[in-house]
Image (cartoon, rainbow, N blue to C red; front, side, top):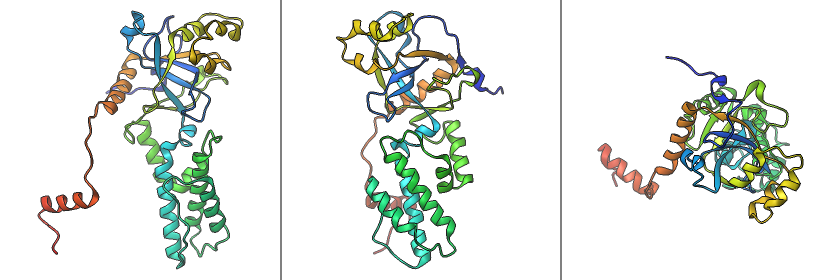
Length: 295
């Protein structure tokens, strides 16, 4: 069995012309992510690109790992772990506070919990207290609209080094979540002005679209981007490209793109059905196990 290396993933000098798997930097997020500009990978079918069947190109955002940790994708897990640590801390101290974290906490909720926890004596439970404060810090980075990254030290403290390392390994092998896809860093090909300069996660739940004309314009040599862009002022999307000219930096090679695309389409190919309520699920589980609850 042969194993892949990060260098196997990319064609860093792809041929001219648009193609499925192209990776661009400087694409707009249109406000659906905190970052104004992001890297993105093209998922428009190759036949549409080659035969000019489409006037738009669809791309999926790529976020660096520390930036992904500051998105709402991490909210439920970070909030749940922080609340669990807070509950355990109170039990071990023999006290109970009315302060808890809402499902979607506001910055004021986090500040209130932080102000309450910081002066408490740890009672020999310093690790739990440190986890709670680290969780609050991580949640602030998720909730705060101007926080573009999360602190890895806070996340590590909250989950514990061993557990966090296991999560990272599952992310790298695409076995932790169905809505992300790991892509390794581009190594020496990355530049300082490259929003895909480190290990990144493709975000399946945020497909975005750009007019083909604008990427055609970005692909041709222009001495003045603003002047060239003015020709397309009638396009509604043009204003999102005023600050930065997109740049194609690489192309994901077909054997790796095929895996990404199959996982992306599988996420949306599910028909799905309404879930049972916890009470009904419990009754049904009891029935199939042969241990029905006795009244």
